[in-house]
Image 1 (tube, helix red, strand yellow):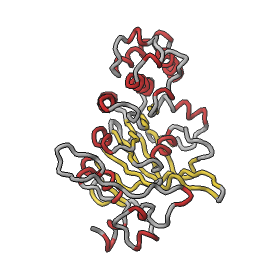
Image 2: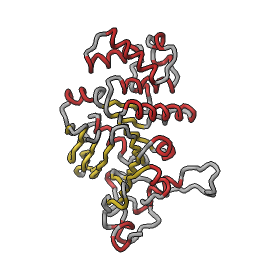
Image 3: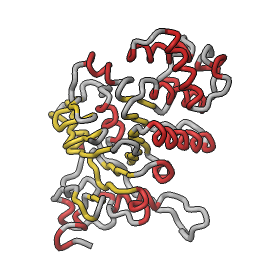
Image 4: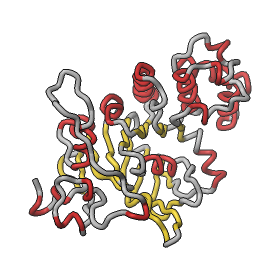
Length: 324
């Protein structure tokens, strides 16, 4: 049984001229002990997809179609009280800015202890022992004294480690990590990525790693899901996608990664910008920015299609008489 399965997810927001489709027919999965990287520019829909898993969609946005299955259980549109039990219990969350996840008025230890007791019901002393164990697990030194420290007394990297400890507090089967390294300097980013990879392997937890940085995906993920304008445009094993991207958008993202010691003379840039929800073009949403677009791209929306073992892409260049 897969840890997470998303089937044909649709998320809509009401607008002045009707409903605006933000997430359009997104399907993906994550197995136990696997890191799935979800990558794309701002506005691609990756964070909305992650928020829908933990019941944190900003109103008036709502899921209007599809299913979200966690360990085989349908958690789509659960009531708030049921979703709160899952969030922090079965699903852990890590956000870009750790200060949004930590209460500045309470010690790190008290926040960990409260989370553990809320979801497990153990005694305060047992919860404190578990909190100390979690801080050691994520590499925080002098644990006993640091339990009584406040968030502002930690560096940015250490605060992010505390947030990871919170995400792991109740032994979740899935962690949604939304841009967990963006606010950190490069050396600390590498440490956090290594920590996530180690925890994934040791705790056998599934991780959805949401980022705009293809370099982070290359370093951390097992598989990648490339999103554009609310749709999945390519999926596959990270090494396969990096070595041979099939969708022109994925090609552009990968072409923008500097290669140390490589022979790439210029980095690729993708002209234009992600379309607004109320002004999506007809046909393929990427066609106004695509150098390979042809007439059909203006009127036909490509479907995500299996093109090789473990590889799927949504591009008319890969279909029928146009197949490369």
